[in-house]
Every structure is written in structure tokens, then in C-alpha cells.
Length: 81
Image (cartoon, rainbow, N blue to C red):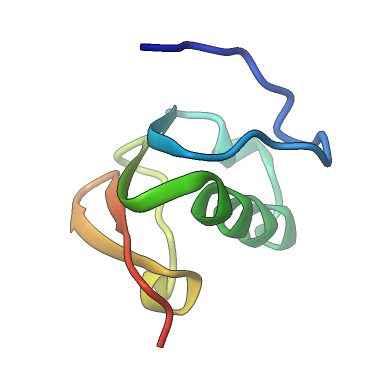
């Protein structure tokens, strides 16, 4: 298991994560930055990887961003069709 601290706005992201947790952070960003970050999360996750965000943080149109909403604050990476 590997844990890292990461600057979300940094252009370089590692890949091949099974789980990314980023709770109660997105509330501080505007919608354009949030969408950019969701796309980066998707790119960094393995297929079927999970993204945990705060329960009050909402991903609008998760399917368009390559995610399936599993429950409040939990999203699973899916293939974009």
C-alpha cells in the first residue's frame, strides 16, 4: 500500500491508483477547476477504481466524466462511451 500527499493543481499526477480520497476539499474550488480535477482523478485511477469525496461534494453528470455514482461521495471509474 502506498500513500502520498499531492498538490491537486500540480500538472503532474501519478497513475494506477485503486483508491483516491479527497474529502471536503472540492468545496474550495470553482466548477471549472472541479471538472478539471474530476477528469484528472479519472485518468489517475485504474479501471473500477474508487474516488471518495465529501458527502456534500457533488459530481454533476458523473457519467460524462467517466464515473458511476455508487452512493453519496463515492464514485467508481467506468469506461466513457
